[in-house]
Length: 178
Length: 279
Image (cartoon, rainbow over all chains, first blue to last red):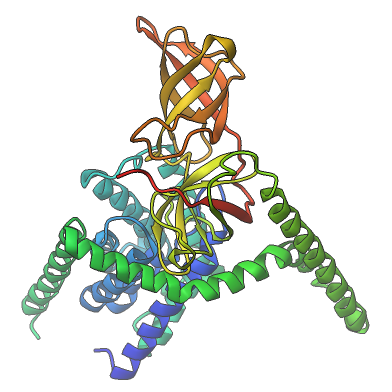
């Protein structure tokens, strides 16, 4: 269970993440796309905090993302909540022995799937131009950015909840998700 | 709590969050609620715009400096003082160059030949696209200086995009290559008159396209906003130049590709033409 002090920390993490996304990461445009910290943090929240609290934190991150974008309001909330919830469930599947999965890899993959889901949902509700070559560029940039940011994201969330939810062995060394 | 109860509770939480999200989405499409959401968005963007400006001011001049500074990692301790002085001098050079570049960009806006009879406001670009799926920029002026939704935005060479949302101190500009862009245009074909068409954005980094009745324009033809009654933009804003004309097989129209005149990468200043489309 999360302590009340941790809620304040989580709130601070969400606010700082939104500001960093808008003020810094949005300016780092590569291949006409920029890294997405918010979707990555959302899936990391699912992994670190579990399905219930992770989905709630992801929803709040989605609210922050929706305030930044001129896209349908609530779409990021929907996508992030489902992504966090799903990521927490996949986290429970024991893949470590197979050598193909670890927490970082799971988070980056979940962030990519969430982005794809976002594009599909946006298309379904009438947004044009979501399923184009731009989507591939976006996935490449978010994947690359995710590999760099997943380790600090997991640790920041772990610090925020003040609880050793995450075993050290679960966090990929050196920031690599591979 | 028993595992089955816990799982049920988790699912109920997710379902609640999904329902709230769907409610927000529905409200966003509803008239009055949409206004409320837009005002909250604008307020939020206004609130963080000072920080964005500060970071934009910092990143523009210092970005290259930091890129170079990473190479100094293995300097000896006795060189640290000299390094600091060198870094300071380099930063000053980059800042000076940046300021000169900014002055040149601002001055260049004074040489804009088109839409000179219309009132306008110059604005700094404070942010690149917020969304990976929308081709937009954010500028550091808003409704407080008369900027409103729908107003065209131009650079030295021509049309850049149009304002799609505005708060008191910031505005979001949808660039002409965004897939949602549709512009009524006139192809300047000299003595044989003018040819009309509608060009569409095709996404980031891709040229604009249009279908034009045969015989289509020639390669190199300049394209301007048509300004016909009911159009979203005033007449005569240069939009682009025709770079290819391909006949559509079996059709009475040509596929025309138009390359925008303005390179929107590294834009630092733009001009907003205070012209609203007729209602």
